[in-house]
Amino acid sequence: MSYLLFGLYIFFLAFILAYNVLQFNLLFHYTRKKKPASPIPLGENARPFVTIQLPLFNEPYVAERLVDNIVAMEYPRDRFEVQILDDSTDETTSLCEKKAEQYRNQGFDIKVIHRTDRSGYKAGALSEGLRQAKGEFVAIFDADFLPDKRFLQNTVPYFQDSKVGVVQTRWTHLNENYSLFTKLQALQLNVHFTIEQMGRKTGQHFLQFNGTAGIWRKRAIEDAGGWKADTLTEDLDLSYRAQLKNWQIVYLEDVEAPAELPVEMNGIRSQQFRWMKGGAENARRMTPIILRSDLHVTTKLHALAHLFNSSIFVAVLMLAVTSVALLPCLDNLNIDTRFLGISLLGLAGVATVFFYANINLLPRPLSVQQVLALVGYFPLLLVMSMGLSFHNSVAVIEGYAGIKSSFVRTPKYNIVGRTRLKTDKGQKIPISNNLIIEGLLTLLFTAGLLMSFHFKDYSFFVFHLMLAFGFGSVFVVSWRDR
View (spheres, rainbow, N blue to C red):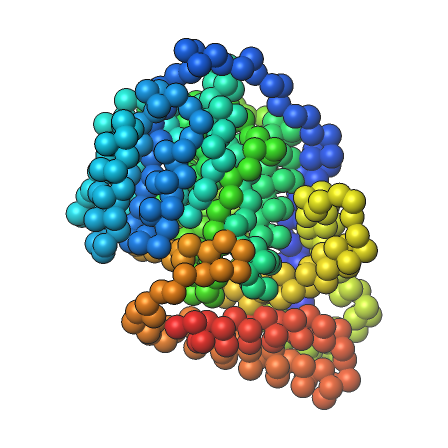
């Protein structure tokens, strides 16, 4: 039993280390990145017609802000239309209708497409809008985004290359300083929108349209088979199908699209669940297609790693649980427990990628305080990720098992900086089984700390301390935010 547990521990540790090796590879590519060649600017009369789609579901606090922002685009008024794709069941619909009427009276081409059945969720709304779209190109913005006025001017010219199917821009954060949790989310997302996206692009691997703050060639969507609602991440699904059809994605790291981060733990949980489960659903569906394709072997490897990257949470959870079970058995193994310090290699890899991604985004000149703050945030980000590992593992397993669930929106509250509108508290969220299990896991890893003292073996002490703090924090804040 001791050797079986040790074998499981090493297996999950090796999985995490392999993931970090691939992250290092993306970092290597990122350091060799080149800015996309600037296209020839389009004259005002040469600018193509663009459809701007705004998919909404019950967003009364941000819907008007979004519409006001979009109609302010510095693009010829007769060269774009705005579709408010509204599936709402609350006052959002009437707010949008009033805004649309206001701007129609000013000469804007804007309409509300309201659905009452919400079939297909966001993918269904985008499909419905696409059927009515007049534009050769389709820009998409979620409810919480406030793109720059020059967004279309900065992105549309890249479509002069007929192979380009998508142009994706980098998310930035309107409220990253609202709380510790928003700060940690921002730092985590920065890794994806720098090293992962640009690293994949530089390495000529598949990358991702992120569902919003990007623009599609309408023909690329249709050629790839259109939006499909059989995964919770319809954006990743269509991205891969389009690239398999040889459409290219241009990623513009220097073009920013500010958005609001979730501020409540239950909002973070619902967003994470959707992303993790959708990734697993796509891995289940796309893996055979990727393996049968004629892609280069390294591109296949990175594509599979991308599709399966949500599995890292399952590996972390299993490593954590196995380490507690292994603690009483270490004496039976007759090994130098310092060997387990190899796990620090994984942390070193994650830390390097995290630090490199975020320090490049800090304003210059750098101050000692900024660098020290970044160093201090890293262990806190690890703790939050560990605390969400059970929740995210459930999502991943459901995705692999083909268990379907609804698309749960992430609440937005019109937050910029630290200012938040007053909102109704609404109904209290019921206590879920997952929340109870997270409370029990807090106790389990606290017991692991006590076992370290009992057996006088501190091989896992820091690991269990981070786990106990992570699960405890997620449990307490989730309970508070109910």
